Length: 270
Image (cartoon, rainbow, N blue to C red):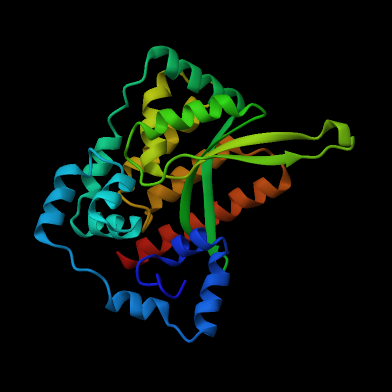
């Protein structure tokens, strides 16, 4: 672990040695190593040839292939793409619906209509909303269709991380009814947006929700800062998704009050 601390990130070291990231970090500190500062001091500078290769191939190769070819970490590849302002072209590329057959699009749309969910996850800081994450999830007791969809999405070659199918156990009152449920969970715009654009004409139940999510993407270049329009889009989607339970009603009222406060601050500043 100490030998290769300059070559791998904490997350990569954790995977290689089979320990959680917090455990690796604590062990480094107990051994007297300040991994972050030393890592920065030992970073390998990018050459003009590497930058040229990245510009020419970042839309053609996956992040994994770029990292392997340039002998760099995934994080280094992602950071350099942002520094070179190539992310905007990546976003433009994901707006082009991927080449899927009509049967593929209809089949995926049917699964999302029946067993999928589209929505937002809102993060709070000091009881104030500050971050929005978009989500798309499909749950099935058969993992074969999910793996097939994951493979199709990986063919887009827009996201650094490949799609994964997760397994979790469901326990009912009768132990004999115990079974596995498999989930395909997407939270990356570079995966969600091209997929929704491709299947939108075939969606029936969740078409309006998908349209609202795509409108949200149009108003947000990157999920760093959010305008009033962004929060209103979230509220409209919550009205489409959430039930009439007291908890969901309180959540929507809280979000509506937050939007009113933002509009009040904006009018006062003007």
